[in-house]
Length: 553
Image (cartoon, rainbow, N blue to C red; front, top):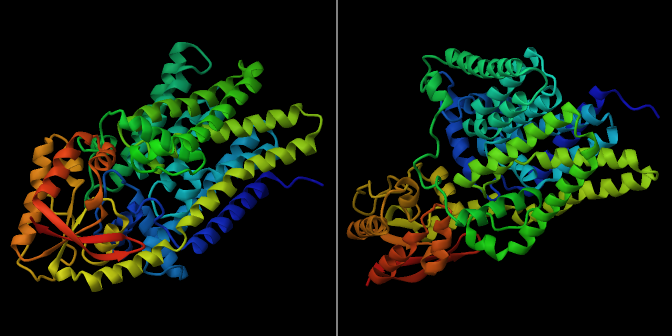
């Protein structure tokens, strides 16, 4: 039977991927699995849907909101989740994820000239934990990742013996990717520079290639800057290149707790095991997370051994420089920021898929029993999808359950007379923010009107706020700020309803604060809460847990 032309193979890969992802989104009915950050992105997208002419650009997502605003208008026109952008974003992510599968298939096919290896690699990548997760929820990384992955694939193919046009194309595609999500520039740019620095030819020619790529990056960013010049929120080229997102906040910094979070991020990227948000739960799941990491290490070692005889091949070297260079630079960057976060790992880890595709092609070439080997590789390539699909099914129906819980909270804890005290990352806070009133936590900067007050509807205090926004605070300053807000709420006649964070031990609070490099603040915060206040249970819900009414001792 004649193999279809590559174009038809790519079209089939895209169509099958999109069909499965769309079906999975509809079946799961939860576009906020593990993270509700996509709800905030949907809110920021709304002005770009309603009136792009007056909507504000975001310097760290310069092209994301204009792009997704236009695509959401297209979905509205098609009648797909009309007027509900927080759902539409998930379907758009499925589209970009399907393009990623096309890029993987085309890349492996071009390198190995094997349809089987390309299909196995595409299936493997489709099933990787964080990729599958981010393809069916509303998080904002997928379009930027797709373009950066495309640039990496082109660099792997071309940078062994690159022409200047190759270098310019890679630089332009890469820039469009990081202009959608700014931080994508950091892991991959050093790898691209490394690949060019070690490419074929005299040193001066290699330097010219690097200059050409940097020029293409600056030119592409400059063209985008000129096209948006004068628009609301437009910035200059320098501010596009360096936005400072996350710097000088609790997300930045180094600590040993982040080693556990790195284990969580790398392990869950491949096989979803749990322990996503804090070092405490990562420690508890050290064995399954380590198994996932060891399986990845085994794939790396097996691939390196299989390809070692071809180590002089310039294309193979370029592939290693680009994908392993991105891994190295990316994990250093992640260790400084949020190594457990799916969107921080997805663009760093595609080396795993590349290694699997190259290993599969080598094994299929070497074996004398090709059908049996192919069947075995197919089962192994499918296994991550089966495992991770089962894991995602645990969150099925989450959006519906959250909406029901929100209605129950409003009935039992009237918003006009209640101030909510949260840890800060409870998923229900996102729903209250989005559907009640889009008001941030007090953080010592709000003086509310006397109770009852319908405006704003959502009044809340976040324990984590001081660690995020004030990394220079002492533990006592952080505790005093929280106490001030609680006292102010009680003095003005509000009921203060505290979440399950009230029941946390000092060690558990310290573990949670470890993700913000603020472990040392836990004792002061816990002492302030339990020395000055007492609480009684007032409401419980299976989706959001228990609420307690806080009062002074």
